[in-house]
Amino acid sequence: MQHWDILLSNQVNKKKYIDSLLSGEAKEELSFLNHQKGILFSDITIEKFIEKEYQYDIVEASPDSHRQLRTFSSGERKKEFLKYCISQNPDFIIFDNPFDHLDQASRINLAHSLEKLTENVAIIQLVNRVTDVLDFVPNKAQIQDNSFQLHPISKNENHFKTLETSSIPKALENHTFHENVLIKMDKVSVSYEDRKILDNISWTIKQGEFWQLTGPNGSGKSTILSLITGDNPKGFGQDLFLFGRKKGSGESVWDIKKQIGIFATSMTDLFQKSHTLEQMILSGFFDSIGLYTEPTTLQKQIVVQWLEVIEMSTLKNKRFIDLSIGQQRVALIVRAVLKHPPLLILDEPVEGLDDENVNLVIQLINTIKQETNVTILYVSHRIEAGLAPTSVFELIPSATGSVGKIK
Image 1: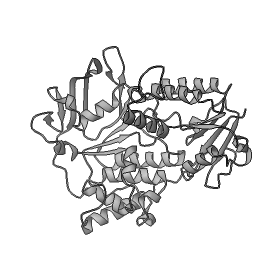
Image 2 (image 1 turned 135 degrees about the vertical axis):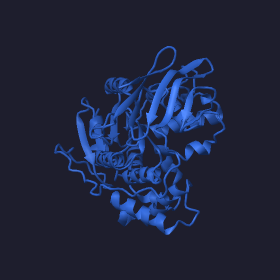
Image 3 (image 1 turned 90 degrees about the vertical axis):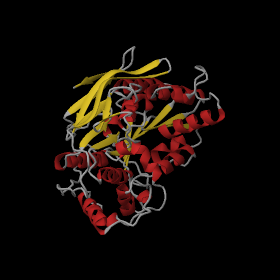
Image 4 (image 1 turned 180 degrees about the horizontal axis):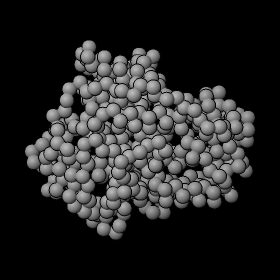
C-alpha cells in the first residue's frame, strides 16, 4: 500500500483532480489507484450526507449510534463519517483538508486515527497548508497547477508578495455609533432543551480592539456570534448590550446589522452568478447579493482605491466566480469592511487557503487594524504567525456549559 500527502496550491482545480483519482484516471506515481475502489472524505461530502439524512429522515452515516450526522459536533461528526468510509471497504480514501475546522485535540485524535488506518487502507491526503502534512505519510508531493504534475515539496522559505499600499480608503460616511463599548455581556447563559451551551459569559468588546475567539468544537463559538449579531432570541431578557442598547429594548435587527461587517466562508456560495469583482464589492454599500442600485461616482472611486490596496485592479471586470479562492476571500473581506463598520467579524477566514493566500489575508487584516478604528473579532482554532490580536477570548467547556477566559 502506498500513502501520499499532496500539497495543493489554490490555483489547482481540486474537484477535477479528485474526480480524476476516483474515476481511474490518475497519472504517474498515483496510477496504482486506477482500477481500485476509492471514497472521498471531505467537509462537502459530509454536508451532502447531512442534507440527505435530513431530507429523507434517515440515519445512514452513523447507524450504530442511531443519530444523524448533524447532531454531532464537528470533531465527532468527522469521526463518525470516517467509520462510515471504512465500512464501505475501499482500497483507498482521499482526505480533503481533513483538519479544517477542528480544534487542536480533535486534530491530534484524527491524526492518530489516520496513522492507524494506514495499516489497512491506502490514504491520499490533499492539503493546502504545509503545517497539515503528516509525518507518518512516506510519499510527499505538491501540485501547483492544473497539469496535476507532482513535484517535490519545496523546502525553501516562501517569498510571498507584499501588499504595498498601507493607507486604505476612508469611510464614505461616519457611523452613528460613537460610544467606546460596542458589545457587553454580563453573566449571559444559553441553553437548548436540557443542554447548557454557555454558562455566565461576561465579555466586553470596545472600539479599536482586535480579539480572537477560540474554543474547542462544540464549545459555543457560533452561539456567541449569533448573540453578537442579534440573530439569537436567547439574548432576550439577559444583560446583553449591543451597540449601546440592551437586547430587546426595541431595537431592530437592522439597527444591529448596520454596525457589523461580517465574513464567513459560506458567503462565497452566495455570489455564484456573473457578478464582476467590482460589482461584488460595490454591492457591499447596499448590503445586497448582487448590484441592483446604480452606485455613485464616489462609491466607485472608493472601490477603485480598495482594488489598488489588494493589488487586484486588473481583475475588476473579471467574474467573481472565476477568481482564485484566495482572491475571492480577500475581496469578501474588503466588501465586509467597505463602510468601516464599528465591528468586523471574520469567521475562519483562512480555512481552505494555501500558505500564500493565508499570508495575503493576514496582511489585509493587519492593514485594517493599523489604518482604521474598526474593531476586529477573528474566529479561528489556529494561531497564525504574523497575526497579533490584542486579546483572546477562549471558551472552555464544562459540565454546566462553556465558561469564558480572557488571555
